Image 1: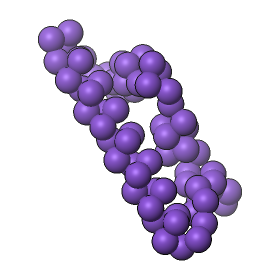
Image 2: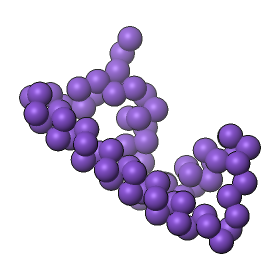
Image 3: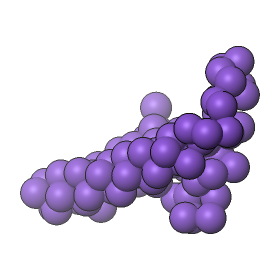
Image 4: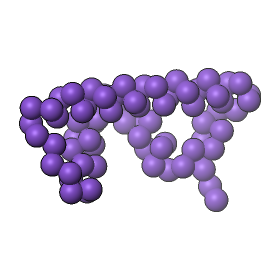
Length: 72
């Protein structure tokens, strides 16, 4: 199953990298995340990464493929 480079990079994040990645992505988009909500946002992004990994894994298993970076 071919994944685009950004999705592959997202899935390859270690747990400790999710917080800094989330803050950097928000800053790139000029989003200000108040400190009070930042932990919740990071938790949601971590959950999204886990769900995406599960979905990609199951989809790949169903087709007999392993995830790989998409090469146009």
